[in-house]
Length: 295
Image (cartoon, rainbow, N blue to C red; front, side):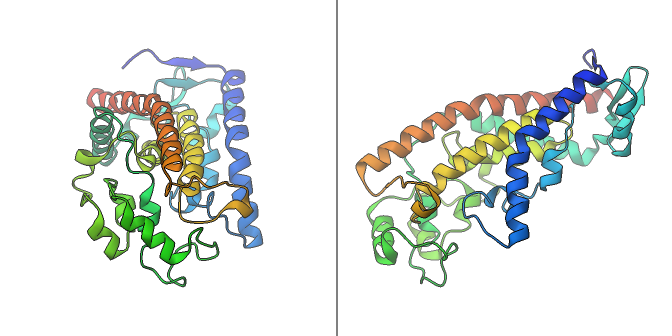
């Protein structure tokens, strides 16, 4: 293992407070909506499709290779993944169980496989359209929102453009007629072979991977992945068939050449910004697996 970085109480408390300050606007807004019984078709996804609770997102972890000094650090000992040594409170290597190691190896393979490919920017967000293809208004997932082009117009777009979705967790929500129109037939088993860094959902899923690896990644990385996922989700829904103008989201009309160009440009920018987050996750996977080997 590498040398341990010792953070004095004043240092790590500042990091902890900064983390909470970064994510709390999101967690508080979601909790307030829930208390009022309100739904948000864009932002709720971040807390409902992704299963990390708001309280857990707010919880700060230093990550591996860090010791927390000072009397306040003892409260981390209430968490099962921590122990105390001569330098302070640290992550307990014994908490990196064989099950955690298997999960880490799986994500490491997925992350490295994805990073090895060039971004593909030609899907144009049709996955959201494929999820409502040939549905009645009552069947549509977000049926509180109107479809910009209506049901028939939405179906026309799906039939006019080729669906090229390789992301299994989007594909599995397609309607059956839309699945038959997809040029790929992704499965969970083929995910490492098909995932590519231009995919909006693959880049949003960096958030899922980060919290699945917690506490063996620092909370700052989880927050960075969450913040990027929140931005990507807005593009995801702006390019969808839904009309979100009443919520302040102008459409990205992928049914037009200009809309497809706008989408592909934004998709490329998100791929560029996701790449260093993916690299950081890869690095922490290697760090954790080395810790298991050393223990």
